[in-house]
Length: 124
Image 1: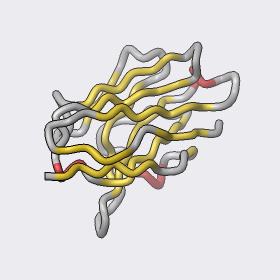
Image 2: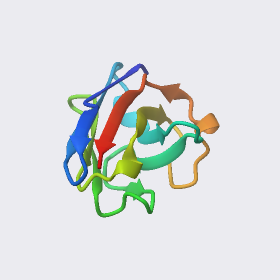
Image 3: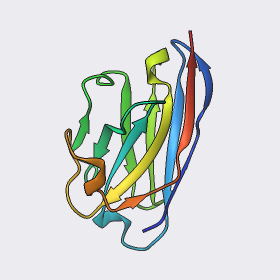
Image 4: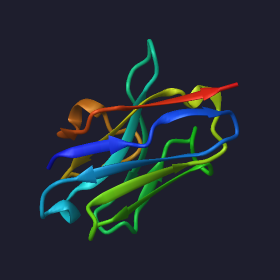
């Protein structure tokens, strides 16, 4: 599967952005999809994931209650709605997919498919 992330930009603290991940391939529904982020000087970290049917979602504690992940298997897309953004959310955001489950604590080097990053900058 090939992934294309979009939707990043510059926003003030407290604002909102929606990231989208568009996937190619006819078997998109077989993949769990997640968002990860990497801030300057920091390791890549898990943000959120959604399982194959969309019924199960997982969030890092730092974004729980502010971010919402959703998917549309008919359109081969996964969205990450980010509300109440904080300066510490500033990072390059990556969408990723795997046929194995993605969950809080998954190591990024265990995930097989990655899109290019999209930069999110939150100003204070």
